[in-house]
Image (cartoon, rainbow, N blue to C red; front, side, top):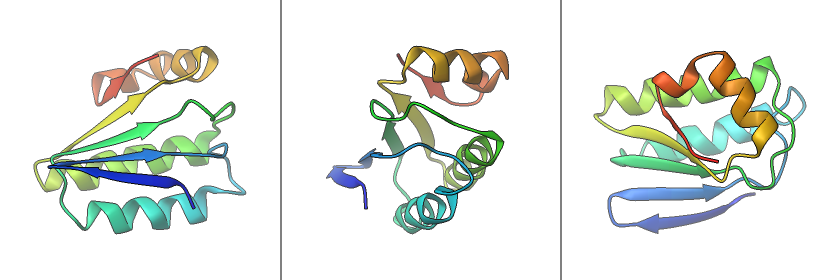
Length: 100
């Protein structure tokens, strides 16, 4: 389980594993549980994430879409260079914030 901090209307999650096909089930379940709180902002700290595959990107997009329906937003913080480059190359930084 990742470290979760509730900060007023925002929730910050420090992910402690890569977002790949073998881990997305647990990560998605955890994120959807947090989306149910209807936070104004969900911050994902990706400092410890070194790899992300297409399944991981799908989880981020699904989380973004669920938050948006409730008026919230997704923000990725401490994103490692290679992961940030991948997200920007797919233009996902136009949908949610990506901060290195």
